[in-house]
Image (tube, rainbow, N blue to C red; front, side):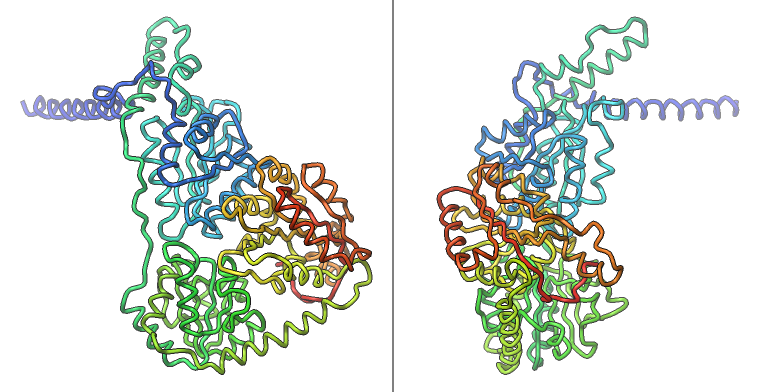
Length: 625
């Protein structure tokens, strides 16, 4: 009898497992869901409409793209809802443009590209957005849900490719998932440390039922038991794909989580700053992120009176001629400082991994990202206080807590005096004659003098752009766009496109090296078609000079560094813009040509100034690794 009881127990367990397995299979196949939510097989609606509705609810104004059949329904639906579709000549440009919109608008930038090579072409731009901490949604097409891994057109494992690059990755499997997944992705992109997110849309989740059923449904069901099973599976998959697709769903934005410094941390920093005699603030791009308005941050910095070095998107935070904005001799100032506040600034290669910081200084580090907050603190530096929180709001709270207290004025005055001396030296170099063509420093000084007060500067290049960073002065906050820590070439066309769309009233200047121009010169076609007139200044020295400067003296060869004095101005003409060639014979007319370029852009033409430049010893010794 005991053996019969044991056998019954085993059989009962097996039956329980079988039932549980069947229930789980029914859930995974959507059979349970379909009992309560039916597919509307007569509806002409498609998944692209759901994407567009969420984007509109999140105040997305632009979707950048290079068109492809996998994503056409999204583009068409967005256009119908008033979201502007801006198509570019390369997928990387679409992502760079979305990155620029994210930085300048405070919303999530959106790019949509087709499957396979369309997505792989964006990898560098997405990595750049990750390292620049830009909130960005990348939408990618994909092969049909049942065809993935079976050799469909442009079918690759896209999720594995983007998981290391994005904060969140998802592959849509049914149309009902679209709205909640896009809402979640938008919130994650902006929360914590902002960054890119990726959603893959298989083609059968985007087109209407009648087209999907025609393409993926069972046409000639095979005979026999196996044939019936396959037919049932395919039909069930199709019905589950559309089950509950058009039920009303909330499309409004989800809450965004932004880390903040605690009151105790702020109070400790107030005490440290109040005792400092020679404090310095290093401001990074992260300090410009929402929710704190940049004008509030600017006022807080001015009230504190602490000398500031500005980097990335924070360039221009204090205007063109602020007495507390220090541009030169940063290394010397850090050696002398008794307190350093790293507000969104990271101790990476730009600060020699922290080695430039004085070990006797008190160091306050504020960053949303814990990894960036403490980068290299195990080797070259140690924070006195490390705060994982938003840098912009921290500065405002610090200023309020120090109301009535200001940094001793002789300290910023002494640093400013050093600024003046160094800049006078640089200005003298601009007046030197080069062996050939124009002095690049003179060209940059002249552009800086003549650009309008509301100009936005886009930096895309090596040597010429490195010089521009010393000379050109953004007139206000968020008026300088560079790639950031990744040092990516090719951002110019996309950044300028996004910037001009966000600020159509502003002059947008792209400072190109002749090497970097090659990546995005085709976007002059985009500028023309989408009526986004920008001005490009190309420092044309027929060389990858940033590399040549070290390669030749160290290794004795200029191999692969040589270019040609190419007629880039004619390329701009061919794409519907206006090009000017500027050489030594045009030196006396340089100001007039720049003013004419400004006039051309006001009349709606994108302009390229192809400036032939010679060599100087400015920035001698700087290296590119």
